[in-house]
Image 1 (tube, rainbow, N blue to C red):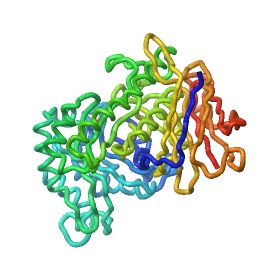
Image 2 (cartoon, helix red, strand yellow; image 1 turned 90 degrees about the vertical axis):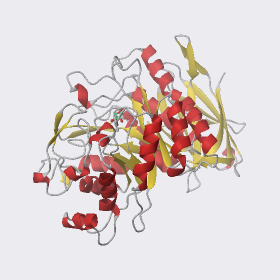
Image 3 (cartoon, rainbow, N blue to C red; image 1 turned 180 degrees about the horizontal axis):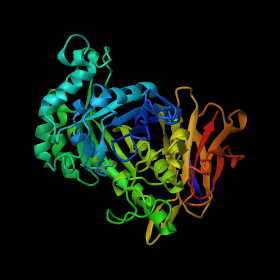
Length: 498
Ligand code: AHR
C-alpha cells in the first residue's frame, strides 16, 4: 500500500496563525544568560548586550511571538528587580532552576528590545503565585501607558519614553503546580481578579491568557471555561514529549529504535489532547472566541552528561525534528482553535532551535524544520485527506507519514510531509484537485529535504552542518497527473507547487 494524499486546493479549512510558530524563553539555565544575553561588554559580538549570531538566526526564522520570563520562573519573578541601572539591580537566587545567581541584567527593557530587534510580538507571563495584583497592574502600566502616570514616568526615567506595544499577557503559569499548587476553582477566581487590573491603556489592546491544563487534566479546562471563560482570550495547555517517564526520560542522542518509535508515538498524543480540550472549550465557547494556546511543548530528554541537571540542556537530533514536524502538522489541523504555540525553549534549554557554547553557535535539526515550515505562516490551510501506511513496533501502531498543505498569500501551495519510520522509505502519492492548471501543463514542483543519515544525527559545535536542508530531488509527475515523492526514512520535506 502507498501513502496516498488527496489535496483539495479549492477547500480552505482555516488559517494557520503564524503564532503557532512561536517560541518560549525562560530564565532557566543558559537560555537567557549566554544564549541570548551576553552583556554589552562581552567579547561576543552583540547589539546592546544581545548576541548577534543568535539574533540573526532567530530573525531568519521570522519568529512571530516570544514568551518570557517563564515558565515556573514567572511566578517567582518580580519585575521591579529587573529595571533601572544594571549595576544596582537585585541579585537573587534562581531557586527553581539550578540555584544559580540571577543578576536581573535581563529585564523588561532588555526583553522588549529583543522583541523589537526580532520584529516579534512579546508575550509576557505575569506572576500570580507569589506576586500581588498591584505588581501585575503596575507592570502593564509601566510597559504600555502612554502619557503622564507614575509608571510611565518611571519608564521614561529609565530611558524609554515611548510605551511598548504588548499584545499578549499571561496571568500566571502552571498554577496547578509550580505556580502555587492551586485547585482550578481557586485559580479561576484569582484569574478573574488579577485580569481585571491587566488594563488596556491608550491604544494598546491586551489579549489575556489564563493558565490552562497540563496534559490530560480535562477537569482544569472544564472549570476554567465554566468559571472564567468570559474573562479570557486564551487558555493554555502544556504537553511535553517524554520517551520514558519523569524519573528516567532517556538520552537525547543515545537511543534504540524502540525509543525512536515511542518518542514519536507520544508526540502524536498532542492530537488527542487538542481534540478533547477543544471539545470542552466548544461547550462553553461554540463561537471559538477563546484561543487554545499550547505555550509549552516539545521533547524533554535527560540532560547532557556532566551538565547542571537544573539547566535542562539537551542535544537535538533528527528524532526531535520529526517530533517538531509532526506536531506542527497537528497544530495546523486544529488551527480553528489553536492560534498560538510556543516551543520550549528557544536557546540551550529542552527542544531548542539554537545551541551555544561560548562564542560558538549551532542550529539544531528542529531549527531547520521551523525554517522550512515558514511557508505556512498565516497561510490558508487546505483540505487534506491523507491515508498513511502503518508504522508498528512493540504492539503499537502509528501512521508512517504525516502531511499538511497550505496556500500562502502569494498564491503558492506548499505541502509539508514527514516519514516517521526509522528504516522504511515512504512512497507518497499526491493528487491535487481543484487547480486551474494540471501538473502536466504548467505546474512545477520543487522541494527541500531534511534528513540526517543516522537517526541520532545532530549538529555539534565541531560539525554544525551535519544536518541541514538539501534539495528534494525524488519528485515525479505521473502520467495520470499525480505526483510521487519518495522520502527517505526519518526525514521531513516541503514540496513547493507552482
Ligand atoms: O520549560 C520548563 C518548565 O516546564 C517550565 O518552567 C514550566 O512551566 C514547565 O513545567
